[in-house]
Length: 330
Image (cartoon, rainbow, N blue to C red; front, side, top):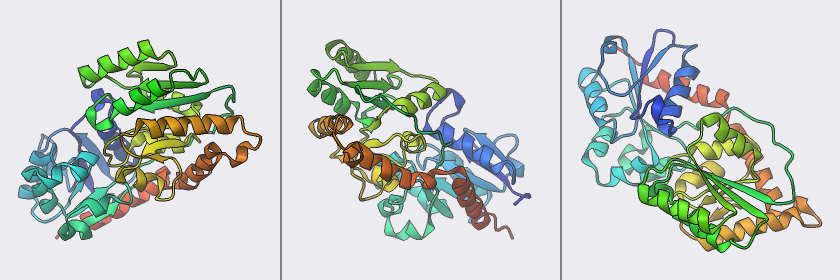
């Protein structure tokens, strides 16, 4: 593969500090020992002539670059990486996103249920590439309280209102602490977070934090909470699993495709009462006579079983196989 030159198109670059950028940058680093790899926001650019393969993140937001590639290299070298909003929203109604599916030779999904969301005509193009995160040792944690963390910019698609309401339901529980990390992408949701913090002292909105600090807080928490309405394959879930921190997640396909159909830590999407109940059950297990039989212990075991899926060696192997399929030049 050393002759390949891969261009990774990402709608967001480093300053955004979001999932698209972290995926693009990680793939660049994973592929760089094997081939030339670079990240751009739009294609073509001044270095476009050398590119032999395009990996384009987001069917709708990268649609112009995808169309330009298909015109320059008809029928070859193009993979479109599908986000949650692609799979569970845009490809159902947006003509640009639908055109991207048609033009691509491969469609990359980031969790094992992703292909089921595609129109049947395009499912043969689908390949699963689980994302990866460095492993961190599971920390010994206090049993005096339960510390939960939620990570995600405050946007409607992340359903932070579910966490706000769960925090209110747990207002009297000083032994359950909730930290919420993420920028106020939606000003109204930011105000709701501030009001929740004023009314519920056990809930803290910490705003956006550097990625390294966020990973530390995930590692130190007893559970990660993930309330999203839709997901393509959440970074924070794999980061938690790779840190020995179990997850409480909304029962949506993108989360099930990461954690498995039999995972015990799901709650119905938008159901704050169910989320609050799971947090209380996790807390009760800390004080149980046999903590090894608790929900928290079961979740840790299930997450440890899934952790190898999110190893960098596996992700790199899947990417190289994808490039082999794409880089078939006449």
